[in-house]
Image 1 (cartoon, rainbow, N blue to C red):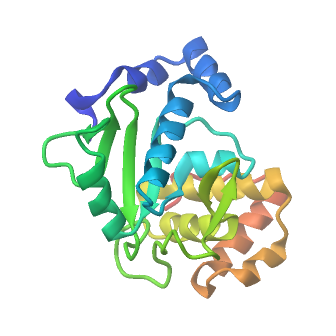
Image 2: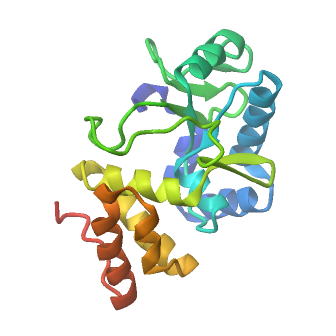
Length: 219
């Protein structure tokens, strides 16, 4: 929910033009509001020993696909989320709106923080073979420049499960196609993904190599 709770940071990005370019340049140069919010949050989570992994646009950026995002998407365990509420809310972070359980804001920058928890399902939220994993599992998380990030194969798996199950998440499929093209990912990577999303990966690989974009209206 944004609406009345929208802050200057999101308004800034939605004005477009040079402001967006400046914020994007600042983030990738290790500066700016979003970068500061991410580093500050990570320091606090590490200090409280709360396991986490970056998802979403920031995870894409850390894996080599720079795409500016207006929020911080985090994976936590349910117990980690509870500890976040107990230890950090009211101490630099607040609920994004009345009754918010998993959406918060950095009180210094106004940057929104969205948390998903282990065991939830991507996309439509319904049970499926692919679920959000434990961020502390070695095969799930990689460390990049001091940040815990969902590993590339797991990120692709989650995005495929999301985009194929929810019409409003087609951007996730486009992200996977862009990753394939930008990182020259092999077709054989499909074999390392959950069987439920292998066909979707192969289809996007073919599109990436024939120049066909994901049709964001096709589902």
